[in-house]
Image 1 (cartoon, rainbow, N blue to C red):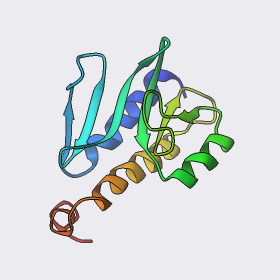
Image 2: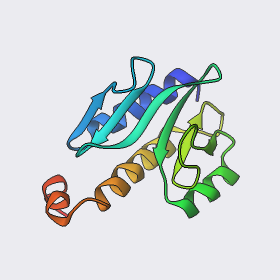
Image 3: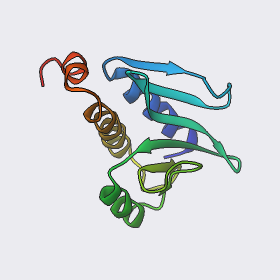
Image 4: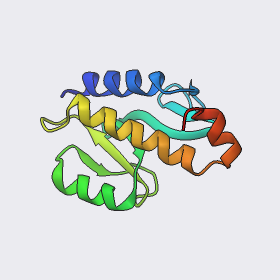
Length: 123
């Protein structure tokens, strides 16, 4: 998957999640995606390469970094809780969808129960 396809896929998945806010609080070079005011995804450039950064469970993060060439510790983020995804042959739309969904749910899981019920009414 190339850089443009990676960012387009991640953006599409993020915007389909309920209550997602798309904004640019750090300037036009970083696209930010939030749920309930909390960031779950960032997109930008690092060393000339487009990347998507997502919250990730620490154990899953380490495993994914070992399995996928395109997954690295979060660029300019907490390396334990964030990953950055770069264009690579082993990065697929299905993987991106899973990782974006995981990130959204990790953020929602940390919110108060009342807020969680509003964001996930069926859950």
